[in-house]
Image 1 (cartoon, rainbow, N blue to C red):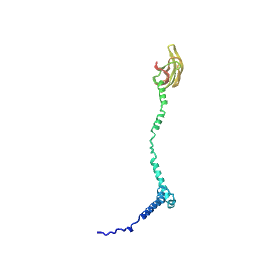
Image 2 (cartoon, rainbow, N blue to C red):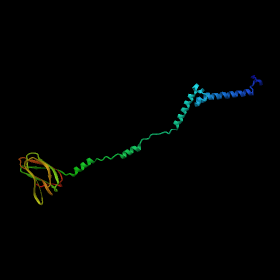
Image 3 (cartoon, helix red, strand yellow):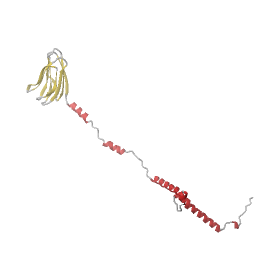
Image 4 (tube, rainbow, N blue to C red):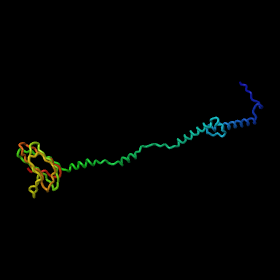
Length: 216
């Protein structure tokens, strides 16, 4: 089918030639390793040839990149978490809001007695309003008439004192001030309408008293 020629013995390389070729290949491989592979891959340039060819810089860059990659992989991953404990501590340490002033004012306003009384007097008619007070108690008072005028007498009494006068006046339309109890008993005002009109007396009191009594 095919005609093939087999080489003759004198055409085959001798053992010496094979040995020399092998040594040459090894030497060439070593030269390539030292001058090209080591500088380009690892930045190692014992002969200086890699630097001349620009292979040493390439190897140094490659080595540096590998080292940085290993360092990045070895670095621990830190995950920032919200400062829940810190916020909770701040909320716990925050001072409580105490509405002291409004509560105190409300309590004081509830403790101090206040009354408003109105009496209507025909011409010549009289009326008397008194407060039950202890000695040295004080009351702020204000009374006035809507029309006309009245005679008045501010006084006090108790079982042992029939009459104790504070002040009085004639043809008066208004009076206000502070009444201080001279003793335990009833303290207040007597009015008589001396005008020709129907008069309404409006009395407002605030202070230390336990009861309002209409005597007349």
